[in-house]
View 1 (cartoon, helix red, strand yellow):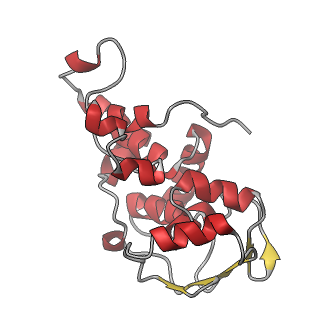
View 2 (spheres, helix red, strand yellow; view 1 turned 180 degrees about the vertical axis):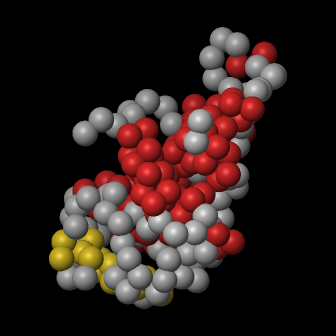
View 3 (cartoon, rainbow, N blue to C red; view 1 turned 135 degrees about the vertical axis):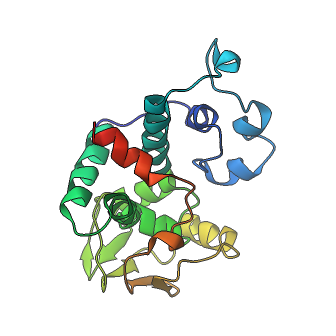
Length: 204
């Protein structure tokens, strides 16, 4: 499957804020956004104006990059959210939050979503007792995600590093198990995004 393999710090610089795509590095002096907060490229420091369409595009790109999904995946999620009852923008964020790689990251088993995708691909987790190696797997309320590799040093290191990070109230986290009590409400998603701009982008 296609996957961007370039420098993800460019994403933070292009969107004008930290997207926390590289785990510990984002909190260190090595963070590229702290050293160069302007967009990458030859004309990065000269970009000033932005149109209505440009703002909508940037918001869509920001959300896509934050959750680490491809363009086709993101469009698919938007179509799914548009068919559901309720507000399309909130439905979209709820779908993105329910991805298995995001659940693993939110629960503190990985330092970044990129790392959580790798852990899922390497079959470290099971959903309702069945091993799942698909990062885009969408969990539902009531699902139980179990850590199969209890002795993994990498996961232990991530859990220790993320111990002080606030955990979502919509999931119950135990030593090697996560239970999804319900899907999150909009005010429980700590992502600075104006989802209505994304809806407007796809509604054109």
